[in-house]
Length: 570
Image 1 (tube, rainbow, N blue to C red):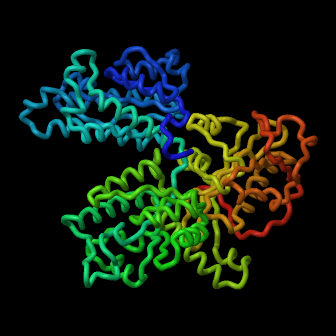
Image 2: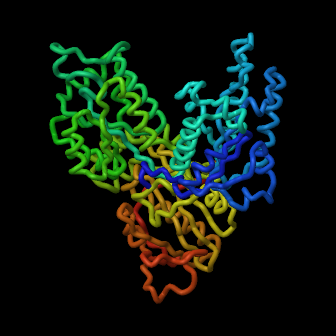
Image 3: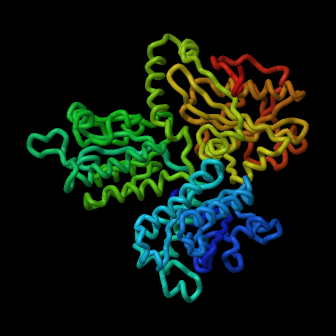
């Protein structure tokens, strides 16, 4: 899915509110399939009533935009206000369904009487009560997210964001511009739920991460400081650091003398991004598209995983021509626009609906790959290398890792046998189905923990189980781990009494690394005339699919060194 699409990502949306949002709903209906309710102020009743048209519509994502002053009914005493907020969240929790995704607006208290409050901190205290309950709910329910509506008010200012005239006309709190921004925000969130984000930001150094040239500091000092233009570069780095902490891999692709550049990276007092923040670095005089190809090979990433940012229009154009899969956004003309431009890059290419622990640990995980490569080069054989890695795979409970399961199924492309995509509701229903078995694995070795990185789903609704999904993160590819995981699934199904197992491969432009998996596992490819019945389970087999079969009492020997365990096993 292209990161620039703005049509709700094909999802069904609903907007509920305690104030009038009819105009926003009309805007949304032009861009996405959106539920049209009647009136406002009964958001909890709609959620709780199983006969409401909202439930018949069946939205994938529900957005609840709540005006805090209306919810409080203008009660500004903290104890009474807190009780109202607690009651609302208690009712909301009782009405949430795990197969749907919910976005709830953050707090902004708006009302004329706030201007005469002697207690200057009361507004912030009441907003904090809402924020605290919202954060607690997001922690308890993995399908609940925060809708950052405050940013609209902070961007426009109160006078432009709110409209007293429209409020008195029809309980419409937001002005026209703010309502349009709310529509765009909702579409952004829907898009983030469905798109495949980029994985790595590749950065130039001179006049990109700092001002000036690394090798000419004796003539022109590097511009990086807490004031003037230097602050613009430092604030850019601060934005990038937060992106890195949320799972964006960083790389350097820069034409410099390495020693000059590393001295700044390691020692400059205002450098925010130290060498440890980068998963890969190419600081040399080679063509940048060649360096990008090297990084792709080193990290086992496709070029379509990269965003390349460079101040030189010539370098950007060369990368666009030589590596058209790489995203190459424009560079701002003024240095004071740098940080804001990077925020837009994050929102367009990298933003996710939820950040998992695997995302936060990603740089360390890829850095550990460098140590693995050193071991591979040092040992005498591939088999010895695998043995010395001490790989351990743990089968974990899919219900405890629902967000990560969704990420693997919806965002993995290279090692993904069928590239089927799922909504949150579909994943929830699959986990409840008695005839669908989900196998989810975390993988670690002597160099570190890769997190939850592989998922296999078996449809057992017919006489012969079918592996409808087999996905694995690219960072653990090339170590025969897939052999061990397949064997674990085969063993489990054999113990459940099944005699045969089928697997499906659907070729795409991006999943060629998995094309020969079933041949390598010893499965036999079936001819079309052998395919009797519904081998896909509840769906028809696509015409382009290749179907393979294995007798579970005749699993061949496979070379791997992986210790398989189950979560919480003694």
